[in-house]
Length: 407
Image (tube, rainbow, N blue to C red):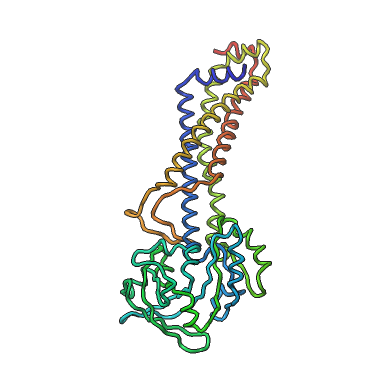
């Protein structure tokens, strides 16, 4: 009986109920979309910070990441890389050697970082091959090929096919220098990469720096970047002495703080938006209770207990919450899916921004996360019940005689 009475009472003033339901549906659906867009933005930032350079995990000599000491290298990395690739959670492993020096073309000379990689393995870790603006990706058969950042290419005035001279210090104390041929130009949107980074083949750089069969690090990408910390501990126990594994959070502490603050920001956003929605629900239910004061008095005079009256009002608010939650989640998921697949390109109006080691791209896209749906959905139900509690309590405290006499 309470269920039928609750639904009948909701539609006694259909306009008011529909307005409240509309506000609840719009607030929940837009909240789901907004959280999805925020997740997409942070996912892009994390991908730009990790998949454009670092990877999700990095194995190197202890202390190497602090000062990039040329002699903090290690060998016998092939077996270690092979074992890592066998792990189901690992997506890619790339051995790297790093050198710093000067690159020159014609009359222009600039400092640069050369990253020696195995092109096929590096494609599984970083996204340079997908960010080409000219030329092509590195080919392992071309020993002296070079993939250069767009900013550095512009400063040097080079195009694919041009030659570069690289000068650096070798491990034996000699000066290493050789010619490179530009095969392609990449653009990541990050000034640190585009203005100073050059990718070359690992064997060529090992020979130039007199570090045969040695590398500085193994860069690793995993299927779930947020679980990097969980995977680092067991990996560390199996590493040879002198090596350490660092997560992207340790390499990019500012990015770690940004991701951590997002969870707090998400709850604050939910609280602010649903506080306004709760006031609307509270107003609707209070007006409904006040209009039915005599009706409640008659029901209580006929034997309905105060607890049943309170449950009746709470049932009405719960029904509104369930209906609006269902419609809001459906609409929010549809909009999130659209933004995930299509997105909005803002490049004509905005440029990429580098922040906390990552790049915020000039586009809006969404990423689906379960929490972005469950938190708004269940929060809406709680807000509905909380907003209905005070009107329900007022209705339960009515005195039958006084309520019947009230006009």
